[in-house]
Image: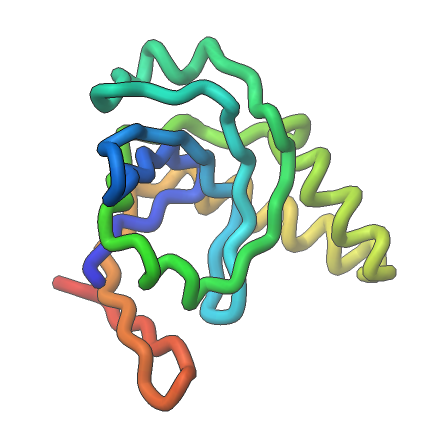
Length: 138
């Protein structure tokens, strides 16, 4: 699967069954898992970034196995905007519950905020013996 990864990116996930579109926002991504905010609204066509930015997440943080991205090949980056600390509040709460040291939390949050300023990464995801392999597409 080829995908654009953008911290702070808004994504459309298109259902194979009825074409219904659900939205999520990428908070963090790595080989093992990705963290998203989920929106309750459903769409029949892909909304614009301007339409999405006015919405509030229904679920502020959900951790998912990165391999699950391969289950739905219809994931499209709509656009992105820079993340703020308040966007990461649910993720921060999650990390604190896993007793991540405060200095590590601060470094991670600052890194994510910086990543959200960068253009999307063009990546290829493949599964090799149940392990996710990630390669950059040039």
